[in-house]
Image 1 (cartoon, rainbow, N blue to C red):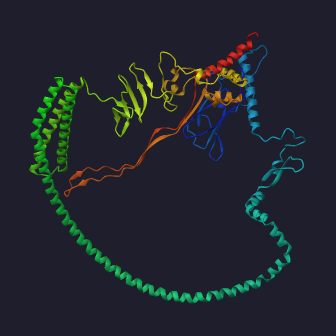
Image 2: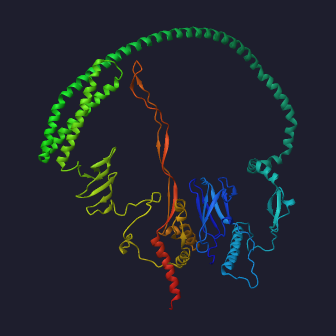
Length: 617
């Protein structure tokens, strides 16, 4: 096989802290021949090691499907880069003997190896400093190490040849004084003026000593008032010290008074606690008596309610009209609501005064038991009555798109409803998203507006009796244009890349049982399109999707303490505190994909061009 691509580098790939698998599309003979360079956020490069930093899965046929996938053991962080190339040794290991074997595969591999070595050299040369092709008579040899050591690279002002420049220390000195140099350069006119008056400057220098002596005497004069002020400040400080002593004595008296007040407050707190305990017991007894009376009142009504419910059931089973049945159900629901309320009140009173030894509370327990049993009986009657009214199980109203018959609590316009007879629809946010019609067809809520899955949330397999139907109506598209010469050339090269591959997750799950698939990779298609001066993202068969991390921030929940009575009995249960936390429901990532129907037609156009070239004109 020939090596049809001169690309011998993959990347640089940008790290995102998530992706670990990076493809490459050039031929190598072994995984050890890869050269992998990691660039940190500061731009410092380092070479990664096989098995220590990464693993490699080579494609099965390096001739028809060159390259493979490099998988890092640790995902590169955002701001870093990863570059993959090859480092095949420049040696010749093929030995052809007289009358020995002359195998095409051996010869092809030898030529491929030479081609790869040339590509590696061109790759390195492409990153080197080169003289313009129009230069002549130059000497590119650098000065010896002894001459260039510790110096910057410069170029001779006459020949332009490389030369040893100033020392690095001198350059650093100039760089450190760059601000001063800038100031001098800005004030060069003033500097020239000073230089022209150098005689006057020297005269100033002679008299500078006298100025210094005068400044010494002036300092003594200035300091005299300070001496006087210092004495006054010392006297004021002594007076302040006396005042502070008096304040300290006053504070001691106040502390003694506060201690006495604390003792008085402690006695008052004890008295208040005793009073609260007595009040709590009195309130418990009164509330228990009230709850007992209410419960006994309800118990006395249960017999009447049960009789009314049985009558309603019998009427419903006898087949009354819909209006009558609706009234019956309304009565039954009202009675059940009343029973539920009374049971809740009774249980609340039992819990609130649990542990209070009062004989009047004992009567509440059997009353609540009777209420509970009454509710069970009523629920059974309600179920029979509802089925009799509806002719089967419980029914709900049809609903509308923004007011569905079955909705989500707190989100009234999201749920299920029936837009017409024998139809079921799903609505979210008051917009129909899915419709199952009377024939069982599953229809989208809005034409050509919703996707089935996404790049981050894919269906694993679609089972269908026939293929998908895609719109190709001439009334909805531009006129079909013939492929350009570059497009035909790219299509021909893409056809050469078709081969077999396996999915990495299938290998991880099934091992050797992972199935082989036919096709090529999107990244390789992108490289080929660009080699032919085409923008791959302008073509519908190339897809790239990126999605962000989606998370829910749960706020911190403060602790709720228990509520106790005066005796330490629990009136209301407390709850522990919970720290704020983040729930990640979707990890950030990206993915390349094909629309294979369009890719296959693109490749078919290239194959057609090949066939046309063989046919007689």
